[in-house]
Length: 63
Image 1 (tube, one colour):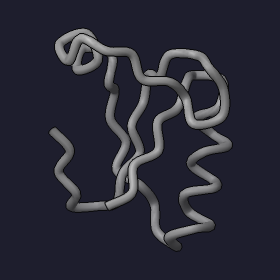
Image 2: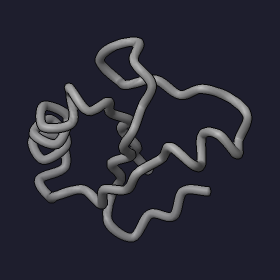
Image 3: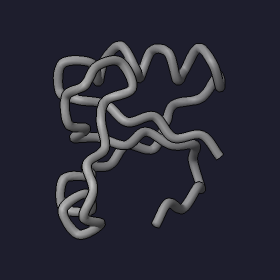
């Protein structure tokens, strides 16, 4: 299962990379609340900013 985490600045670039890599569009969800509940920070794949979005392969369940 592949998961990309993205900040608001890099979401479009990471969607493009995901589509290039997997030849399908990703499932997109917000992760802000999940990060707070988990008690640890997750960062964007491309920078150190906090991730706001999770991109994953269709049908993948991430919990």
